[in-house]
Length: 380
Image (tube, rainbow, N blue to C red; front, side, top):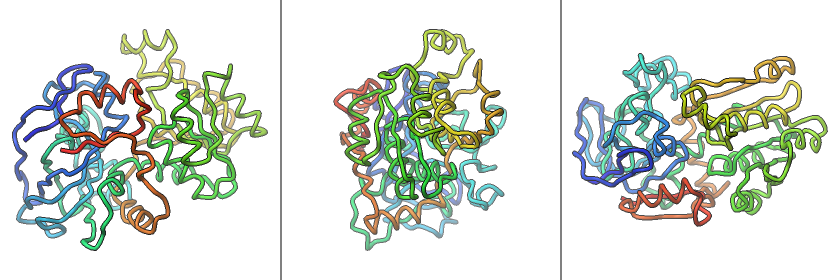
């Protein structure tokens, strides 16, 4: 089969690789019909996450069940399914309590990271081949797949983002504790940031403020969500300005940027020396923008080591800091219902659809913010 593979930093190639096979009795094989490039994939693309050449990447897939293991009862051949980026067993304490992103059984590499596992996200997170491929082996076939009812006539594009973007954004708003009447600041106007803004409005926020430094993404936020938009490059201190215009700070700040924010010269050097996992710029804006007793939700991915982390100011102002990978599976039925009822339109974030064979150019475009790209769908 053909698949999108990592070959080195900024070197993504579509290659012929071995077809996946049923390895355990509850595995399924899915023929991928749509998949997408995620901002998290750029960490692999840039070589920021140790990855072996030839590794198949991608964690936002959906498709048609091609084969099922002998113990699979949830799905059958021919079923149309969306697959969560979390790999989750369904039996452990975490899976049983709606914390599927930290499944105790899916990641065999505990010496690397005592975390859950994810499709296409390196050996550290389970070493599972990714979904930017023609075929995908899916473990835990009785728990993971979301089966799309046969009566559903929605195209892939409306459903694909249940794999990651939508549950991540929805969980971010919910986990932040946002209440009706609150003011929310969303840092970053990529796909997750755009959907977090939308869900903040839907949760009853009285004010949603979007921050980015790319004018076309800010314009997309204004057009799609009617958010207040601010380009942080145009302000000497974005966080303190937000604190001023919100009369003391926002109730909730949701950071959808993470380690990929704008780095200082020192941070660039420290990251190359493995002394810094990326920039703290978004966190600093968030600390300055949030009110006392407010909450900062870190959804953008961060590296492992950070110098000069401003813990003292978080502590002395009673700011709550929440973090992590979103648990996906238990949100999928709710999101499907919302999409089916036309409560919102997930396709608003799509700017590009290309054949999977063009993945190399699509990654470059996505990384370099060419052609006003927001979200790229790949078609195997």
